[in-house]
Image (cartoon, rainbow, N blue to C red; front, side):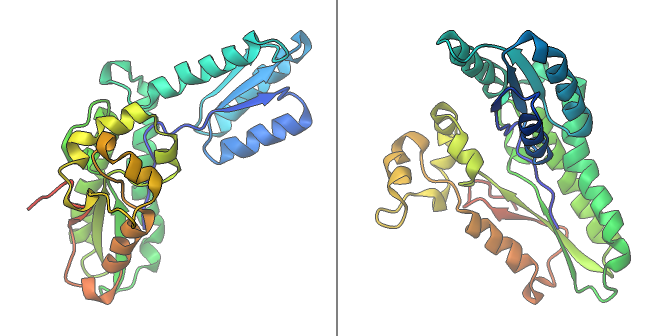
Length: 269
């Protein structure tokens, strides 16, 4: 089992006339999938409907929903929307601790710490009694590497690792309990990550043994960025394979561990 959320991996969606039925339906659907939104409306008559919709979305879903009145028929309108999305969302991608608000802290701990705990409680009646069960929590090297801007996110992952060790003892007759700690992974979040953020990973990526880029094996984009980024991220299948290993019978003597899933970026005894 795993529970994972990417710190401020917010998808900015700009909707024209969200107060219409189609726009409202799209906004609700995307919010239910975890996307934060910027709702754009044009006319004064749509203001109250858009405000109400934004309030409903933020009440029903753990997302940010902003609303702004601009006319996209003039050059200043799209520019203002793009600037708003950048300033609100991209600037939050690596928030320093002094920028965190209590609601941000509570949201992240609720998902990354309370969520896994509630999931284990719900699964407890169905766990086997012969140690054949498997629980694999998805942590992160952020729990140990002290990345700038990840005091809260890294703290949630450290808490999850602590719970992993406790559950390994408490559930010893039912299942093994381990965690994995990926570093950068080539997901949609990686695709959206600004190049300056990728370059900031170079001190870690460049000393990860398995992050060395392989000409002819890794794709052209990764190859072309190797000097700037310092290496490559993991492919999702590489992380999934480690989870599969921990779920197999061969891992029956492994419990309470945080298993490397980061190409050697983090080596721990």
